[in-house]
Image (cartoon, rainbow, N blue to C red; front, side):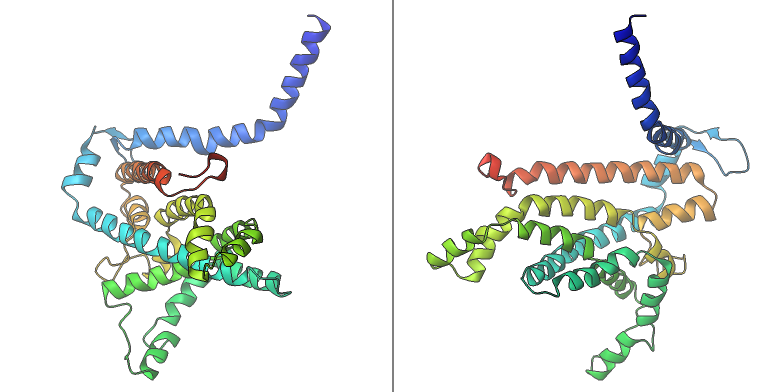
Length: 302
């Protein structure tokens, strides 16, 4: 082998050796399990016997014979379509407040980001459950202002509101991304708009929102995907039951119950693939509609 070819082969092998941990991890923990899950979705498998091929039966049961499945879809879509916009609005609001020259901005950013780090933990979910208990802080405050205690764990709608409020509280990651985007908007643009007589509301809708629209798109997609996969808060707050009356039975929780409580691994695999398809369709829809509301300076806007 010529020396030049040997050196090239050696460099390639060295590169593959460095990336081999990722390749092995991707194949062993992502790609191969995905194909196994796809196969399992066409089988009846309970962990104790060999998988038995049943074709489309799992999907037929899911779409036509399981009302609890459609309830989990409805609850999840309510959770996503209400919780994600509220979280983004709140994150943008806080980011604009922090977009100042105050010396304490770094401290505030850290404090506001903490809920996003620990928000999905079991401890925080237990704390949230205690806050909304019959004698918790929330009901005590509502009673003090004359609204009266709310049965957060007895009313399906109230329990979902409680779950959404926990989602909105975890706004830190989106807030930091919005704050970075705000820092990149030139102050001269606001000064020029002020000279032309624009008020703060006009500046927000004519400058801030258009220039932040690519960041809003990114946050919207990432937060939507994350919301669809929410599991720990729903599991802890409802004690794994999805109650009351399946009011907090998110898709991921119902999938977990089918897989590890009822041992319907084939059915759970089918549910996982339908979730993947739903997330993919929503992501594509957001990208297709983005051309009407996302402004890219390099392209001169839309």
